[in-house]
Image (cartoon, rainbow, N blue to C red):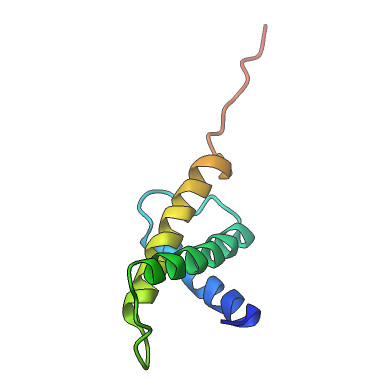
Length: 95
């Protein structure tokens, strides 16, 4: 794949990964979601090739499902590590 193809696939896969990831995953910025998608595409491609993926003609649904799963895991990790917290913690005032 070329770089532009990976970025476009990363955007789509990142958003799909965010969609299928369990829990509250809307607390990370969109740029991080895209990076998770690009990582998911690259890691998914590596796993697919290591498992003996044959690169069948047409749309290779196995490759894309593996990439979406990898992106979902990366989105969950990013959400847990760097997500924006909206706890609304209040500081007690002294009287």
